[in-house]
Length: 410
Image 1 (cartoon, helix red, strand yellow):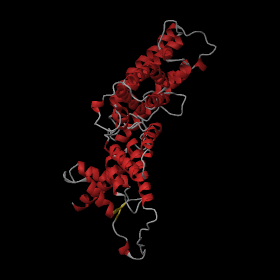
Image 2 (cartoon, helix red, strand yellow):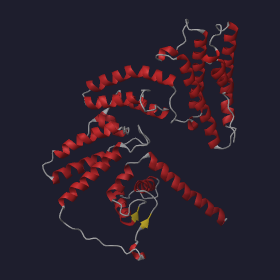
Image 3 (cartoon, helix red, strand yellow):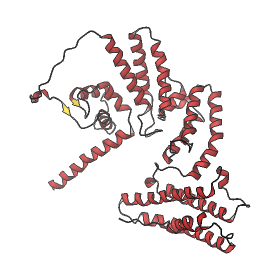
Image 4 (cartoon, one colour):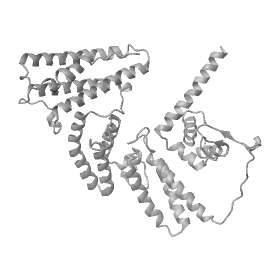
């Protein structure tokens, strides 16, 4: 299906009429031509504004609406970046129209204002179709970088004055700076910037009363809550706990310390749907998994020399294949039972730890014949965006099958 393109006139104005290659060796722009282009710019802004809403909802399919809006979002970003190439500003102040600007520079800057307004319209009016994973245009990035320095300076001053760990403070501020630096490999997307804004707002007043009582200081607990899953922060937490674990005088004491941290990390609250990098595991899940692995290793060292019997399976004997073999991963199984508890399919009095033990005894996941009940229990509370999406897709297949069954039984 061919989608309409509402920016055709603006695109031609910027990419052709106002392109520097078409203005080289020409006399200064006449006043009449300047007013003509400026008039086209303002007229097209209103035309596109009116057309976007009307055309979007003329499409009956959600997928077509999304494609239509994201097509225009991408085109606006491209045109804004093109104008930045024309202007080549040193910083955000170079985007503001000044009296001594040439006529062409004034037109470029007015084009940027119009495109900014249209982008804002798309983001506010069509929020569900807006692509948050798209890279922020260069002109917006210049404004972000200009506002960022004084704000980070205020956050640093506040955190250090409140006696928060200096090393952790610098780690956080450096991570924010790196993500907002267009010279790094990190592309600042709308989603990442929304997360960073929320993070900076929280850092401007770290209130311990808003975070559930925990063994850990307020700042690390806040970062776990917001799932600040930068690798550097995970390494910071591991280093912190590792020093305490190694201080244990015996293996038994080390296991006890690990078990304590395992419990404390598992019980820390985590804000649903939050992540600096959704593609990476959460802080909580990575730390809990590491602690569980270390605890298992030390427990094995205690039993070194003791041989446990094994019961071999006969592949030809169907009775040897016992249990429920699922195509779900351990994380998806944990989320499934968590959803059943939250939606009332499991009674409220159900003990989820006991549920995890029972399921682990009889279920086999997609990748593991033997499920650790402890890991399954942790998966019920440490939920990843990727797990939600994959389980949602698989349950949708079940729903579609039920619909087909209902149709066939009528």
